[in-house]
Image 1 (cartoon, rainbow, N blue to C red):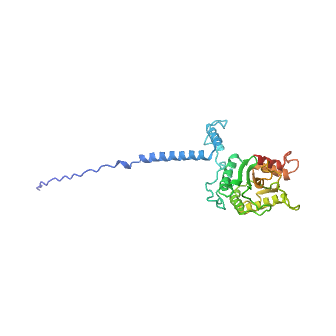
Image 2 (image 1 turned 30 degrees about the vertical axis):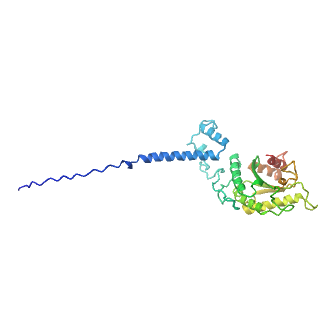
Image 3 (image 1 turned 120 degrees about the horizontal axis):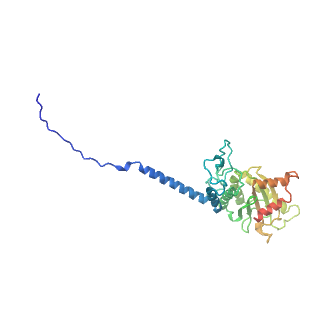
Length: 306
């Protein structure tokens, strides 16, 4: 068989440039960057919510200065700082950090339900968080200049007083002004998430009430009772308030001027567990267990002078 000499055809194609930009190395670098940014924002967040004292305690804790056995082992469950009991129980420790949802624009309904983690507020850090929440509602109200929220040894005191331009009640009566009622209603949604007990007291100035049957004692008592009813309408539980008292003009806020408008006030004291136990012991405990040498007026005087 004869073979024909067929021409050989060679096809040459241009080679495209290889794209080297689709490797996986950039993913590792991006993951490191994301982790570093997350750590940065966590540090900034901790610095924002913690005061100088708490920051010092955090540093001491991490260094092991607050633990006699040295630095904390993060894998030692007995030293776990989680709010959940890791030993098999379902109990949750008292919360200290509320939700970030806050009231806007002076809304009378205050915080939305569930924005503050319910619990007993006893420690200094917990009381600071609660006072901060109360202050945010106060600053959005029209009575911000008439209100003082302070941390006292017995808990948190909310003091609301008159001034020369703004009254909580109509002079000489227990008729509540609408803006004061709105303020109490806005505090209710926060206070209902707190299991601490409360006491409410009403105070007047030294101006005598006209008449003999109705005096400053009755006036201060009626005003305190009305404040309690409005707080209950706002969400405060019925058994949360354990005492309502009328103090007349016996404990002036401005001692140098007993007739001053600021002496007409309503005070709500959010009690810590120890303060509540002391108060209950003085009122209803047997004589052998009741504390000696302390009166309820002295407790209130200490709270006022703080």
